Length: 197
Ligand SMILES: Nc1ccn([C@H]2C[C@H](O)[C@@H](COP(=O)(O)OP(=O)(O)OP(=O)(O)O)O2)c(=O)n1
Image (cartoon, rainbow, N blue to C red; front, side):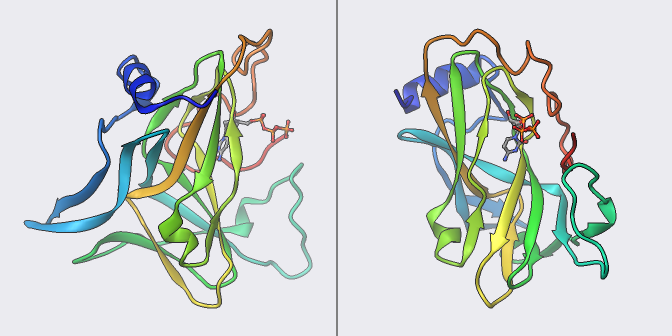
């Protein structure tokens, strides 16, 4: 069953989501002015996490090479610069490109929960597709987040504001969690983690 706001609140206070906002945040103070933000925090049946300002990287083509998930070449990912103006801090994801960011919140997924990461409507309306991915039972760390700009226009991706929504699905306790099978992406830090084997 999908878990509700009351459950997410209780679990977050026990360390499932940190930092945690117990209500949806729609405005914040920026350079002394109260401005609207892309919402983050607790919603009815999910939690909207923020994009970290620490790192965002964009794929680039290197002539004569292909990306190999078994031997990922970091040169294929170019660091993007964080910019700031009166609307907030943001990275630019160019038209028809793919970028990787990292969550601002650290997660600790319980052993009986699978978490699904889905896009936010505001970004969807701008042509941004958040790659649909699970965070597994027993996984801990900062999610690496993947975005495609499917439109023909460059788009801002705001840091420190909501960027994807997490849904929490409860099942019977699993026999082998991400922790017990010693998954390779366990305890990710707040930096983009590249594909590895
Ligand atoms: N947007 C996401 C989604 C998930 N994860 C983390 C949490 C997941 O529990 C973990 C998934 O790791 P796996 O080792 O299961 O990944 P794969 O199934 O892709 O591994 P493999 O290449 O071995 O098949 O990655 C992440 O950092 N960012």
